Length: 194
Image 1 (cartoon, rainbow, N blue to C red):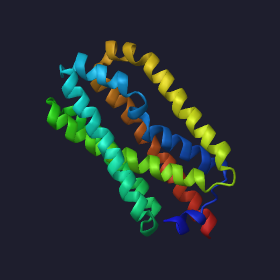
Image 2: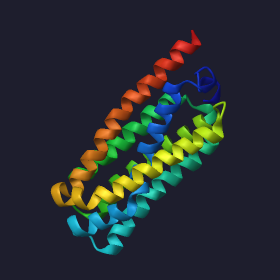
Image 3: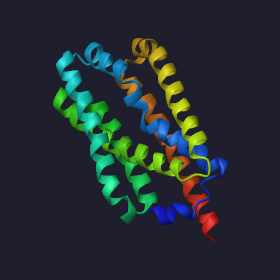
Image 4: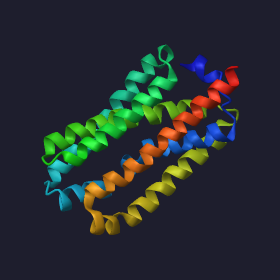
């Protein structure tokens, strides 16, 4: 995977900002998780314990993918990891829209976490390989925190208008847009490797 990444111009603005966008999307629910838990309790009728179970299932998904990629990333094509992570992430969110009971919802959130972990791990790797990783990681963390601050600020209003399912659909729109960032990274890789 790292060899393929090295054929990409990691220091191009397109690659850096696409990577920051993908990392922000990957961390989206994790960074607003306190509000998400509140939404599960208030809008899905889950008990606080059930909401905690669902949240931990998603975090376990992130952890599993991160550990697996730590040992296997060098054997994998980063484009496939990126697309697979996005598909798991989007699929988990779409499945969450139809789930009504905590165990099924938790299963879908676990799949969402698997995709999220792949995105975050890959994006951290890409940022670490850039020519100025400290600055670029600072940008990445700043945008994740800005997303989190805005997300937690608007979440009560969003819940009032569209509920937690609306929030999940809203986040899914960002994830669909992330597919274009994925295509941008892929076309950038093709341009450099020619």
